[in-house]
Structure formats: structure tokens, C-alpha cells
Length: 343
Image (spheres, rainbow, N blue to C red):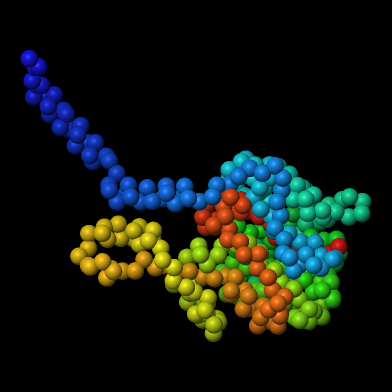
């Protein structure tokens, strides 16, 4: 006959059960964790590639003297962000030596070299989400990123223009859109970093104006390419962003759309399934999204660039984290480069 447990053992068992229940995650927490796990599992994972891959624009590739490209995350030396990654920005997590190796690989793949085989100088900016645009005159002219003790002294801004050959202009990206402009007749180019702040400040529209003012470019001769960035499918925004665009653009309502997002609704209202509303009468699971491709396309049209001379590579960085870095999706991530130069 089995011996009955002592009263002390019974009390101890009850206490342990209560502690286990109190320490266990709440049902709403578990649902949130599981939903997050399912979303992450559904996202493409970064894959290790043996070679560097570069995305190009078909329209820009038709210009024989032009060199351009949008980097991807594959085929690099960086061990962070998934391993074997082509991080081209000096981020806090990465080894600067790996970033330097990655830039060499990128320039080699791009074939940005002079007749002697030396790589073209790469000019970058201290990007501050502004509409400031700098002109690059030459190897030792004003606005040139000077070298001192192996460190690049960068100017603050988010746009670069030049008509000097053998110089590579670039902007760093990880969701914000890069926009490249090239004048087929004047042999002048520009590259611009267009996040929501830069777009709201009309950096691309101002870029067309600066190329016209400094190089005599006519908008009808310009070809524009909008590179990879976070698409309207993934770019959820708040009221402050929408209000900023509403205050600046008469066509702002065309730039926003409501996207069904059950994830956001479940996170905000984890007990929604307990409400007393009949099916179909609850709060709709919608979130406000911004289309930055359309916003910059409209600016190019307003500046006089012909619609047939504008192209978007149509790649969402947040959807394709196997191919691109995405700050919005990953938070801790690397940086890509969008570059342009004149042969």
C-alpha cells in the first residue's frame, strides 16, 4: 500500500505549482512570441554567396560612359549580420578591416579602376537626412573627401554631384532610397540619399536643380534610377510623418495607403478575441504605409524629368533580407552602397 505524502511535502508541492504558474509567460505573451517567431521564420534568411552581386538599372546601363551599381549583402568578409556579408559601412558591430576588404571587393567587381589598374577614389558623405548637396570638383578640389592619417574627413549632407571623370560618388543605404541621376549630353551625374526626411525636404528635386545650375543640365536629358529601399508594402509610418508630407505636397494623399496588418492589431489589443462585437464589426486591422518610390517619382516629374526616363529597380529591402540589409526589419544590420561615376 502506497504511503500517503506528509503534510509538509504536500505544502511544498502546492508552493512549487503556484511558483511555476506565476513564472510562466502569460497567454498574450506567448501568442506575441509565437507570432514573432512565425514572422521571422517566414522572412528570407541571408545566404552566403561566393561572389559579390551588384544590382544595376537597365536605363542607366544604356549610357556607355556611365558606371553605376547598387550593392547587395552577399559575398563579403564581414562575420556579423549572418556571416559572409558585404557590409560597406563602418558600423559599430563590424571590424573596420572587414569593411575595408568589402569595399575593395565591391570596387573590383564594379571595375571602377583607371588605366593603371588603381581603384577610383570613393567619395562619401556624413549623411544626416538633409537636403544638402555637394559638388565634387576633382581629386584635390573643394568638397573632396580628404585623406588624413588613413581616415576620411567627410562633409555633412545627403547628395553628391560631379562632371569629373574617374571619381565614384556614393551614399550608404539600409532602407532609405538611393536615387541616381545622369545627364546623357552633359556627362554629369548625381547620387542622393532619400529617406523620408530627405524626401520631405525635396532632395531629389533640388538635385535636379543643382545639376541644372552648376552643369547646365536640361531635365529632358536626365535619366533617373531609384534603387532598392523599403517599399510601401513594409514601410509603416506614424502621424508625424504623414503630417509632414501633408504640409509639403499637394499630392500627399496619393503617397499613403492603408495596409491590412493583423500583427499590429493583435499586439495592440491581445485580448481582442474576447470582445462582444459581432464578427466583422471590430476595429479593422489597418496600418498607414508610405510609398517613397512614388514620392520621389513625383518629384522627378515635377522637376521636368520625362516619365520614360525614370526607372525603379523595384526591390524592397525589408522583403528581401536575404539580398539586402534592412534597418527597419533587422535593427542591427550592415550598410550597402549606391554609387555612380563617369568613365
